[in-house]
Image 1 (cartoon, rainbow, N blue to C red):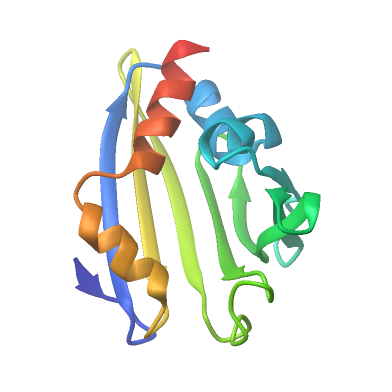
Image 2 (cartoon, rainbow, N blue to C red):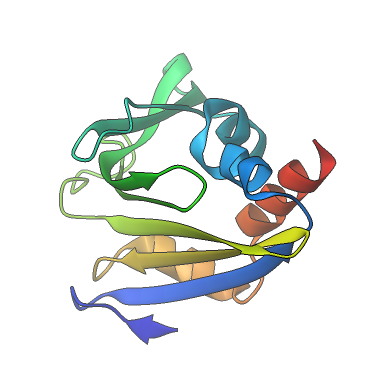
Length: 151
C-alpha cells in the first residue's frame, strides 16, 4: 500500500499466471474477459489513447446499465493496458472527480505470465477502502487468473 502522485492511495497486485500473455491479455483487455471477470460487464472502447472506455452490464437501468466509465491512457497489446476509471453518475454524484487509474503490465515468465496490476485511487474514493479490506487478496485478480488458465 502506498500513496500515489495525486495524494490518494495505491495498491499493487502481482501474480504469476500459467498462461501465455495473449490469454492474460484476453482476460484484462477484451469484452469477453471483462464479462467473465467483472460481474458480466462488457468493455466497450476503441482503445486508442484518450478514447472513452465503458463497462456495461445488468443493473438498475436494465441489461445495458453503465457501471464504470473512463479514458484509455495506454494500450500496447500483450504488454500494458491502462485507463482512468470513474463510477457511473448513478453510483456517485461526484463521479468526475472520483477516479482510479488502472494499469495492467504483462511480463512473460517462461511458460507463464506475470501480471502486475496497480490501482491508484483518488483521495476519498470508496473503492480503495473496499480493495484494502481484501488486500493482498483480490477476487478480481483471482478471476483474471482463472479465466486465463482455464480457457
